[in-house]
Length: 439
Image (cartoon, rainbow, N blue to C red; front, top):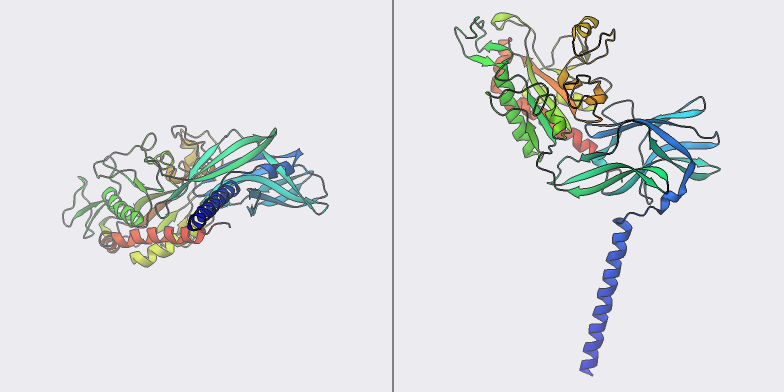
C-alpha cells in the first residue's frame, strides 16, 4: 500500500511538472514570441507615405501623408503588438484629398523611445469606419532605411531597439523590436565636450582682474585658461553623471589634448559616433573688457531651433540653484530667461565657404548644436560624417559665465561642483519625468 502511494505521488509530481512546463511555454509564446496575426486586419488597398523620420536625442519623429475616404474617422498613429496599443499623439490635418500627419512640432519631442517596454511593436495608422476599427501600414518614401537605438543606462540595464522596414504578406510594415542587451563598449549615454583645447585656449583671465599681457601672462594674480576651466568642470560633471548610473564620454581628457572639429573623435562627431543621447558643450564667456571690469555676468544656454524647452529650463533653474549664479542680462539672441538661439546673419552665411550663398537667416550659428543634430538641426558641413544623419544626439552649448568679470571668475573656479551638479540634476529630473513607460 505504501509503495502505491509513493508511485501515485511521483505521478502527480510529474503531472504538475508537465503542467508547469506547458504553462511556461504558453506564457513565453504569448509575451515573447511575436504574433503577427493581427496584421491581417491591415487594409492593403491604402498605404501611408512616410516622408520624414529621425531620432533626435531620446525621441523619434515621423511626418507623412495618407489618402483615405471621407468616411474614415478618428485617425491615430499607433504602436501595437496586437494586444495593446500606444497612441503616439500624432496630429492629423486634412489638406485637399489627403491627411498630413506629424508626431510633434518639436524636434526633441515625439515618440519617447525610453518609455517603450520590451517586445515587438508595429507602427500603424488606426481609424474607424462604420464603427469598426481599420488599420493602415506605412511605406518608406525617404532615402533612409533601418535604425537602431540603445536606451540610456538605468539600473545597469539597457534595451536595444531595432527599427526595421519589413514586409508582411507583401504589405510594408515598420517594426520596433525591443530587447534587453549589454551596452557595447563603444556606445555611451551622454557626451561632454569641454570647449577649446591645447591649440586654442579660449579666453584668458587673471584671478585678480588684472589685464592679461600680450605674451599671455598675468603681471599679478593667477592666469586661468578657459580650456582648462571647461575641462575641470567637464570632469566633475562626468563623475556626477556616472554616480547617477550613466555611461559618459569626454571628447578630451587632458589639457594637452588637441580635438579636431570634424572627423574621428572630434567635437562635432563624437556624440554620434558613440550613439550618445545628449551632447553637452561646456564653454565660458567674455565681454572683451580687460581688467575684470565687465558688468556682464551669468549663464547663457544656447539651444537648437524648434525645441521643447523643458530640459533647457531645468538646466537654467538648476545651475542657478546649485552654482550660486544668475542668468545673463544680455538681450541679443535671448528667447527666454537664460536661454538663447543664435543664427547666422545673411552676411555671415555669405562669408561661410561651407555653405552655398543664400539669404536665409534661420541657420543655427554654433556647429556644436547644428552639426551634431544632423537633419534635425539643419547640419550642412560635408566634412561632418553625420551632417545628413537621421539618428543624432540632442545638443546644448553652455556659456557658464563671464571670465572677465572678476567676481564671477572666482565663483566659477571655486564652485565647479555646483555648476556640474546643476547640469547633472537637470538631466536626472528631466529623465525621471520622461521615464514612466507607456503601459
